[in-house]
Image (tube, rainbow, N blue to C red; front, side, top):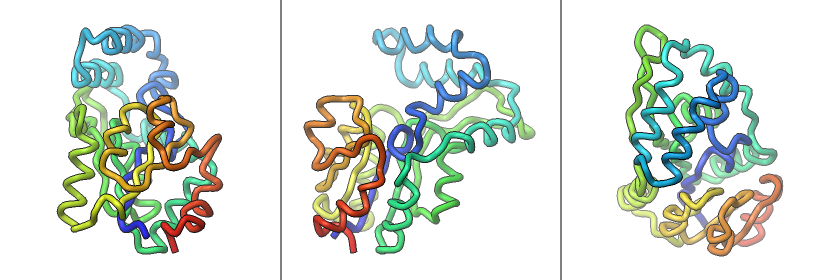
Length: 214
């Protein structure tokens, strides 16, 4: 039986693979963000600098508008059922995301989840000021998961990790049950105990069938 689930958010629970690109498209700045992406993927700027440059494009946007846009990004089919089943079974559920808290906080509130770690957009008088706080640097997902496991006394064999990209391999290193969702990395696919495509509708049944969930 699993006692702790540490879940990626974007592309794993929510349909959009990146909340940054999702907002760039809807705020009309995708063309400006493309240069940041190219530099980051080429290794010419750090992840933290990529975050700083991307978020700066949203300066002046009302937080209420950002929340409204993010609320329109749907869950993958089966994701709400998975979260509810985990909570009903008494599993401690944690979200960890290289996205931001405006995206993860509503999920935590909706399903009564236990922990979350994400980057933070800074706000002044209800308006994004273009700043950010990088709470999830490279390697930060694993550090968060291992910290929770140590604090709660839960071993790897009772920990579930779920993700969709190469960046989630560090979560797989922490967990005894590894779930890939529409994996964008063949290495992640190969490391997974189970792969769900195109959605999570079979996830709860699989966990129960394999004795991981009541």
